[in-house]
Image (cartoon, rainbow over the protein chains, first blue to last red):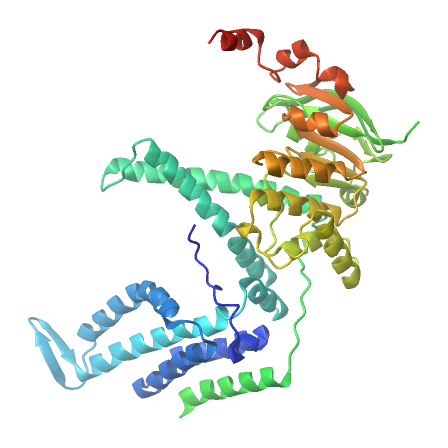
Length: 250
Length: 248
């Protein structure tokens, strides 16, 4: 069965893989914030180049990244197109019927798209170069609010169980002649399916909670982790933070 | 005379919606005993098991574990002494990795780091799952998950093991391997199931639960040959079904 596997390439060896996950999270997250704050198109291009460079260094196949970008484009491209036609500044460079494109509009639309793609690409060297369970432990050690980390943790553990449950329900529907389509019956059936899924999830949550209590859960969810911060880890972080600052200051 | 591991006196339970779950349960289980709790679906087996480590608490305090009444003060110790293994291992294994899961109990007990690691490693070795520490539960087979669910409880060194439907969803090979594993454990064991083959292989004593009541309690070799008794409680095919089967 095909699962969404964000950490499929965590087993590779690269300077990014060897980087302490805590330093990596902080540094790349800093870079992501810096990239989305850039107001200059040229700098945004530099940001995009840095992002692509990091992916290359991490040895994550670019095909994998592109596969995920396709989904993200779905949100970014319509937004850019709207800005392209609605933001009017500078010389007019093209006209389609009642729509005009100005140089300012083109620059603004490109800026939005480049920044967004750069930010999304940066997620891969940050998240995909380390097993997801280690990422969660790093978040915990970085004192990200515990509730948030636990929510991510349980989502990660049960998303696959949930996907299988949905697949079983869909299979049961199909085997009894359900074909779907654009009609009210499909909507009603889907609604009922989602409702059932909620009920089942709630029941499972109850059972999981009982299992937790049975093993002495008292509101404290801990794991054992060993992280070791070396000088090279800090150095790598320093370089990326410097780039992050430079992108917005220069 | 052996000490009592579990003592239940007149335990009743009603579900929040008003349906009776358990009625007037009285039973003593001795240390080191291996007891099968059998009964049809909906007989109240799981409900009874959930009373044994205080997930469900009776108001009258009529459940005693190793001489201690279940209550606010005793609950922590009781949950350490009673290892409850749930039917669906996906409910039991909730941590991101196998090691985290097996270490969950010992960490909650506040054990030092080295002891947590030692116990988790040992428990995984007991169930033949060493080397699986870094694996993710959702990538494992049902049989593997079941073994790890046992390890997750064994790491607490429980005195009493309570297992709900241990062999459900296992193929025969996984099932018999799992039975061998359970046979190797020496603590007091309570096993709820309707897999009579497994109960026969593992339990010296059998309790039949039906409609929330204990309807029979005795040595396995006596109960499991009493076809009429089993038929009366939906644990064996009734005569008509058996005969019509022969005619075809």
